[in-house]
Image (cartoon, rainbow, N blue to C red; front, side):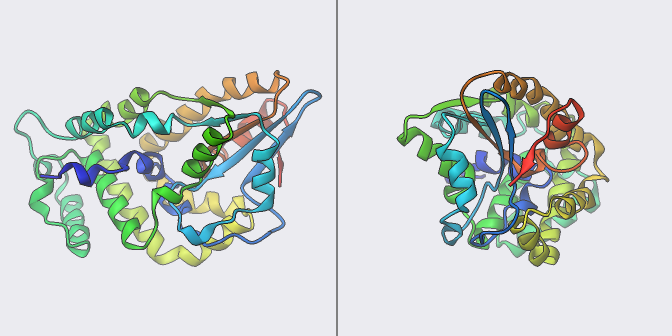
Length: 300
């Protein structure tokens, strides 16, 4: 059985898992490139910044680009996908663990296609994780465990994620914090998935891990120079095979957030919005959605 230590900070990889997450996280210390994954919308009253987040990082990735730090310094309100403190509370992590386990006698191998289960076992072997510990876990929970284990093996830690960095900084600086979603909503994204989609989610996660191994140099380069076109291509490479997962975790949520972003544009205070990079790039990304309704986000 997976013990409580295995769930430590699992919430950080929730949206890192969702589509581009695994891919966009592997970066080294950024240079002062001409472009970055930061956009700004200026109105007569304020500026709204959109920052593509990297949820797991290495300590060596800091300090961040001056452009990004300036956007934070200029903003009175900082917006995150959810409240990171609430997600890390022990009662919620226990609830997450309980929700990730079969309670009716079902087992993982009986709820996965044979090909996916065999691939999953191979990945566990590479990570030196015993397959029997995962027998009572649901596919979505297995995906979070194996992805976090894979990234930690490579030296990446959610403690150094962009979200965590600015969340801690904003609390210390006593800036106003707002959140797009509750922790209950985020957990429900996984627990309410049908069994078929859970299996697809695990399968897609395993494929994204393979992308990290083969395209790491490209990913580093594209993120550092803000090459959103090629970043979107990498996302699509993994996700086009899983339209239901893409719609659930990216498209629907982007559309839900759009009205809130518009409300910020009608205020007098500057706002920095920090979400996973997958939510910002591509045809269905927030940047394009804002352009479609008449705004002009400028990439920095």
